[in-house]
Image 1 (cartoon, rainbow, N blue to C red):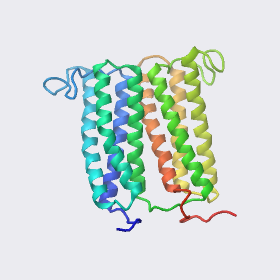
Image 2: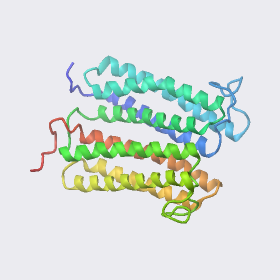
Image 3: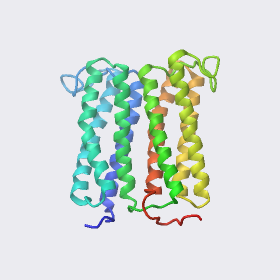
Image 4: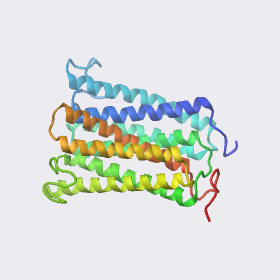
Length: 305
């Protein structure tokens, strides 16, 4: 089996389908959080003793989350089996697929703990981070299935792309900390200021401002990658999509702050922001995979002298 074996169309669709289902899981999980529906199902793993949702909004939202979980588990199991059977010569496909499968029981346990302990913030935040790692692994496997295992950009571009993806992950972790501390309102309705100054609102304000600064950093890095891609150093379409995702997400974040409150508008914006976080994370991973490993010989792009 050659190390550069091309993934079959069926496997590519399976990988993309798995990643897409995982994105839906993150998005629905965000809806659960912003609507306060985390305890809508009093039992685990079934929603109720009769395995049906209660006749209330929160129960149906939480039940839909668990239904998506079931679909994702099936897809990930099939993906891991197929990766093991057919792509052991493609480690960039095999290992992310297997790692995602390993994370399934961990996420299940964390989900159960969230219900049993009545939504402790630190568990909810950790659950979100692990979920994003899980999603990132599936995106990595899917992007790799569409790409040969060789570098498609200059060394500098590839290194910057992977560094940006890392900063994006740190942004996700700090965002999870904001959720865990319930610090999303620490700055009031002020942007770019925070509670009357650059940093206000105590510890919660510090976390919120750190989240903002990381978001600005990701935006700057994404724009720098796009500029370099337009000059011929890397994949242009992937860089453009990453910038669009980052700027859209930043706009949603600003609107959440300015809108404030706990009404329907806040719920919609906050839900979109969670889905946007997953989209940004996916776009940065895809861009990094498209750029390739900076240690490999270049493929379609020549090194600049």
